[in-house]
Each structure stands twice: as C-alpha cells, then as structure tokens.
Length: 163
Image 1 (cartoon, rainbow, N blue to C red):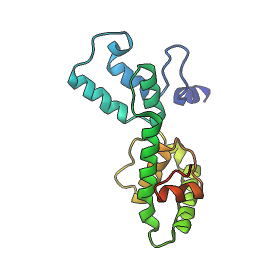
Image 2 (cartoon, one colour):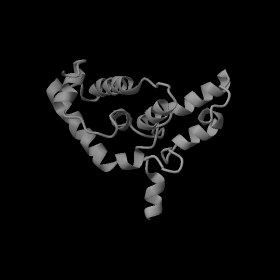
Image 3 (cartoon, helix red, strand yellow):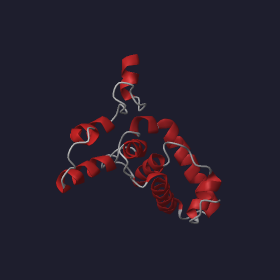
Image 4 (cartoon, helix red, strand yellow):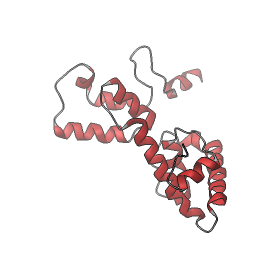
C-alpha cells in the first residue's frame, strides 16, 4: 500500500525530479526538452502544449518553472477560478447574492469532502456529469482543491477579489 501512495504522490522524486503523475508523460513525449536537444517544430510544440493544458494546474506550473516557460501562472489560474465562480452563480440565480454565495460555499465544501479525492487528477469530467458537478470540479481545480468562503464567493460574484 505504501508503494501505491508513493506512485500517486505529486511530490518530486529525488531520482528524476519529476512529479509522479502525468507530468512525466509530457516530459517523456519530448525527451530532448530536458536535455537541451533541438527545439521542437511547431507540430510537436503544439502537441506538447496541448498535453500541458490537460495537466492539473500545479503540475503545469511546475513544468513551466522548471523549463523557463510560463503557463500564465498564478494570475491565470485565479482568473479561471473567478470565471468559474461567476459561471456557477447561474445555478442559484433565484436567490439573493449572499444566499447564493452561501449555497455555493456549502456545495463546494461538500464536493471537496466527498468527491474531490477521486476526481482531482481529471482534466474534464465524463459526459454524463451534471453542469453543477462540472462547475464545482472546475472551481476546485483552479483553486487547487481549497475551499472558498462565502464572503470571497460573494466578492467574486461581483467581479472583485475583495482586496
């Protein structure tokens, strides 16, 4: 069982310096990238970028930092999270903003506690998932699996981060 946990860990391995999830697949797809090999042509680069976009945000940021690139980093992830929260507002459109923020907070906390562990590695959910489920997954993904408080959600509904 300890071996399974070690395989699923996203912590860098001392042996290869790569997280133990999908990141290794992206690097393996272009071994020259890690060894100063020739720059990939446009087709290979597009394929690598497509694979990078499908990784969890923390792994994509790790790769970008390691190889000097940028995926937009923290600001882009927060912008995606903010958009996902604003999109989720429509599911509680009949409620006042404070009640909708509270309802989303409860739904997100429930999702994080019950489902997130099984779905955190998924870039997209299966076609049969409900719109609310997809929305909660997107928020959790772009917030690194962390909960949001109702005041923060309320501020995001209004297009502000509340600073």
